[in-house]
Figure 1 (cartoon, rainbow, N blue to C red):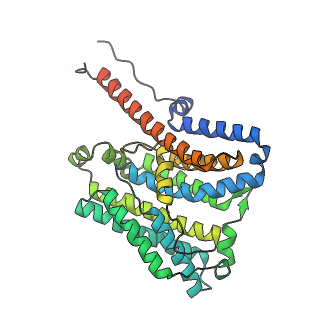
Figure 2: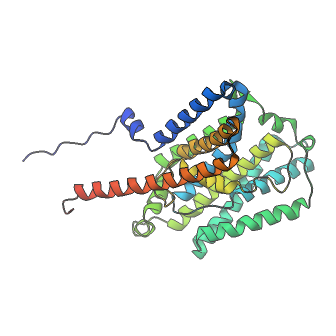
Figure 3: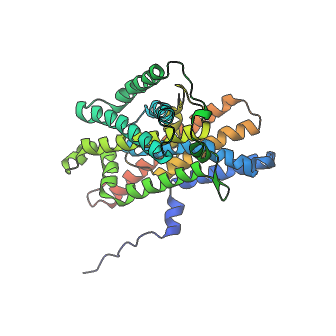
Length: 338
């Protein structure tokens, strides 16, 4: 009897070369190189800081969105949650001027998680499609924000200096908000890859019915994904307040589509089952870089939207191609395959 050869685990270099995110990184490097050749000031320290600051809030939202999309759902209410929590943290600091900033940020995160739980509860309990539920709560949360603000605007003078400092402070030249986004992406990636509950989210996205038969509590896992997405939106609201200082009911309006685009461009399959949190964060950085590069190169802003749309189509096409290749590979390995 001849023993079959054992399969060895791929090494780090092989994993990097086969990572879906490698193409995004190469596209990002090519874009930065071309833009810098046309305008060397694009790589100035101030320009790079502005680029990282602009991408950090979208990146945090895209990380939360990843946990939802891999379960074959979507959260369209993240922009409204950001706006509501940003305005809420402003009102909180006006009502309690001496409140520690960390407490204010924690309140924003918990408030976002509560709104995410509302989304997840409706989807899990009522079995209503996430697209419908979060489209409805998008308008409900934004309506509450407008009713609460009543045309009022919170100025930077009303905010604590410590919070505003977080929006401009750097560590070794890297903005604190960008470091925050990297930490959130790293923790989320580690959880999704290392914990059983994280891997179950991918199983749900790959085949919800099979996941139920396997004994996975699909409703509870989906609820947890939406709670996490809401919590990251609450954190993004605190980051928005720190960066801009001036707050009104329009904060984060329309950002939800940019967040979904960042996740999809970053390699998160729109049909669920695959994708990484750090890939979504890189996707947010790529979209922000495209926007900045086109402005630097003085190209019509119309092309920015066209390029983003093209990237989404390419990402979906690539995801479909990889799925078909994986199915063919599994059929060849199966003893009953044809």
